[in-house]
Length: 226
Image 1 (cartoon, rainbow, N blue to C red):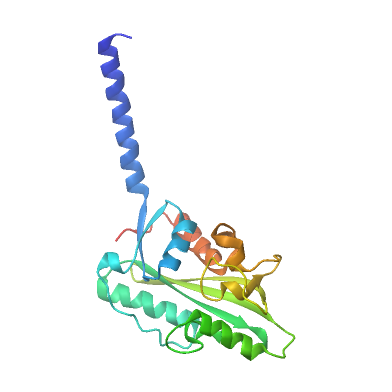
Image 2 (tube, one colour):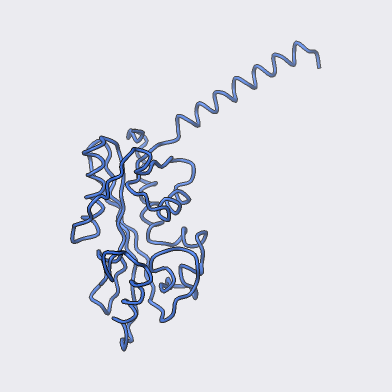
């Protein structure tokens, strides 16, 4: 191949490669996720993939422990998202999740993280659930996640639910929270046994995040990037 032709070909390839990189960078959306919980960040990032780059609270220099004082899961998600939008003026989303157990009148619900106390100790929370369920045959439960998204001042809510049951003994080592005692419908393993690859396709949070993604993808005119 003549040297001059090689140079022309290299320039053409370089041009189109650079254009493609610019296109990818332009198309990748950025959105603030109002959390510094590493488990949530990892889980949601895996579900979202490369289409949306998540910024966490550290990325926007927010070191405030945003109060979760609402009496509903939806309310807590909105509290966190509104705090970021009102104080940092950035498009963002926040989530809140609750474990709702049928025999316990949907407790712990909005208080799931601190069911056994303000220390938010997962082991203590699971122990309290088992104590409250002692002697009860009905162990049906569901996880429910609500995501509150704020874009340009407008609020949107997305809900995800997964049904299952509370088993009597902890099983598995992956995941977090109540995962070792929650067995989703259609499976003979707990969330903690299934691992992230499976959990991230069937979980309550996955369902809510997928609805968020569908909304963003179906509304490309929305300006997501802060």
